[in-house]
Amino acid sequence: MTEKQIIESVKRQLSYELNCEPEDFSSEENIITSANLHEKRRKFSEKPFFFQIVTFGNNAVISADESLHPWLGEWVRDKKGYWLLEQHNFYELETKLREYGYKMALTHHMFIPTPEYLNVKTDLNIKWLEQKDIGEYYGRDEFSNALCDRFKPERPDLLAVIALDGDKICGMAGCSADTPEMWQIGIDVLPEYRGRGIGKTLVALLRDETLRRGAIPYYGTSLSNIRSWKIALSCGFVPTWIETESYEVKRDDFVK
Image (cartoon, rainbow, N blue to C red; front, side, top):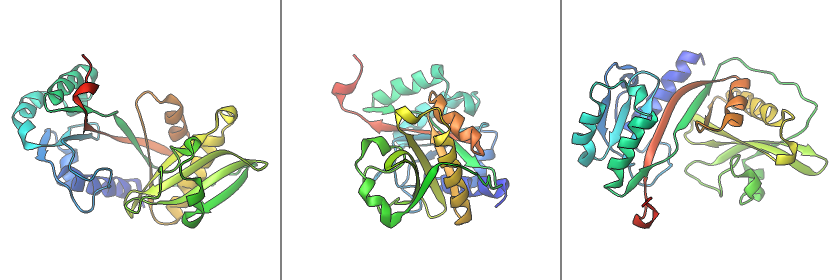
């Protein structure tokens, strides 16, 4: 696939989730749609998000409960979509959402791969894990980013690669098939082994292997996770879109 084809595939996937058309992400205007629960979505929630927003760096596409639409129409008026995720605008959004018992999650900064293989060479002791081999590693806190917390048939962990120091695992990268076409990569390196390039090597190896299997490896991190950003940028990933969503909270969890 070319980079253009990868971006087109991502926009098609996000159009299912934001209840819009793929070309809407390239519009000059901010777009507001009604929340839905498409059968082809990445299955991160069992019900529609009360609020969800995506920007590819131009406009913003927002999917939200219709009760929010009148306020959202005023909120986005005369604003560039990519500025909506800045703190001063985010504060206004957060304040409004709390009236409904919701608050915002972290912003997810998402990366896609360049199409060229990296063909990484390494002296690390590497071991590959197929889906059948992964189960024994569930529930281990040190691999909470590389793997889901348990087997999830709706987005199974299909492939992982580990680096070994003797018999000890010092790092693991894994990918979950969030859709049949898009596999998300996560990485964990034990604290005492960080700074040695292990995370970069594992992510690069997994990225190439995912491409060879005909899927799109993608990578996400938060705004302030600089270590994770550096790994992505050094492994042939490019920042492509930002997405975030609301989640329901208990009244006792609100800041007084």
